[in-house]
Length: 137
Image (cartoon, rainbow, N blue to C red; front, top):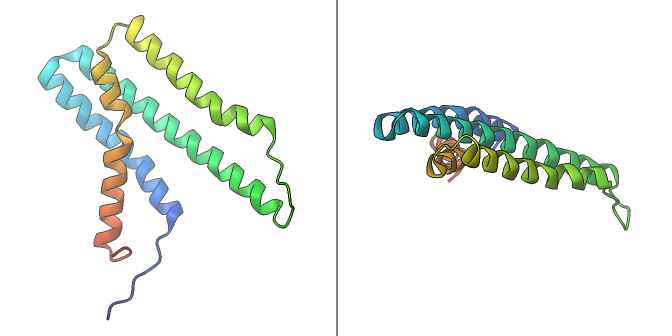
């Protein structure tokens, strides 16, 4: 019987964070070949926003976890409004940025969305790497 090594989730998240720009570059090159430079620019900007969103989400989750651990045993855990504002504010900033990219820069919305979704294949590749290393079965 084989033993399964535990997954280092910090390394897993860092791997996803590193894969997002690589996948974004592949998507941008594919968009350049298939639809031209404006689509490639839209995909690249979308991937950059995806990376930034993932980074901010990760930092926000770490902050909430630290707050929870610091208040362990307390009946009512208090999360500051500033934490809620940051967590929801990143979504608002993301929507404003996508709106500006599509409306003002007139970049193809499909290309921008393709770049924004670079996190999904990054998660799949990172999980596949962990499975190949024998950390997940």
